[in-house]
Amino acid sequence: MKVRMMFLGIILALLMITGTRGIVADGTIQDVKKPPEVITLGAEAKLGAVKFNHLDHITKNHSADGTKQVECVECHHTAQPASEAAKHPPHKTVWPADRTTTLTMELAEKDPNALGAACHDCHSKTDTKPKLLPALPQIKVEGSAEPLILNNQQAFHRNCAGCHDEVVKLRPNLSPAPPTSKKCTACHKKTAA
Image (cartoon, rainbow, N blue to C red; front, top):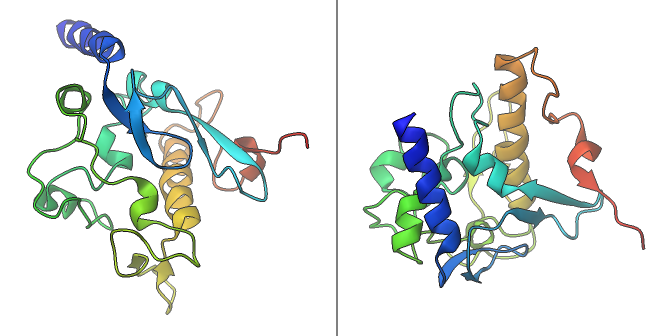
């Protein structure tokens, strides 16, 4: 209970501070007064944009097993030291390369630059060179001779849908279940033209 109260206090403090930075819909970093509550992903996706409730994932027990909040580095994998990233393959890249801190809400409150790289800095569109890497990251996928190129679409889908698939696997009786990798339009919503 004491830890939960401390956590809520930190969240409230984080929401009250000014001059911090956060990711906005296009993947860039800008000054904000609090962590973004909802982030629009895939604004140009053929199936429609995705409204991602960032606040729910950082304040509610949305880990795969439902026992804790999603830690910042589960999505923002570059925001930790290389020694920590190496423990969680395939996430190997950190930014900057000599990083010594792991992103937490407490660190973000103290250091507006704690986030480091934005997703699109490494996971750009297929036909675009990433800002921070010489080429798009690739991983070896079991059962495939060709490496998987982690453009922005692949990276988001593997991270988001992969986690949701794991939730359904670990908690088959969860109601409502999160949308899985087979239910694209549960997340992607077309807007009226």
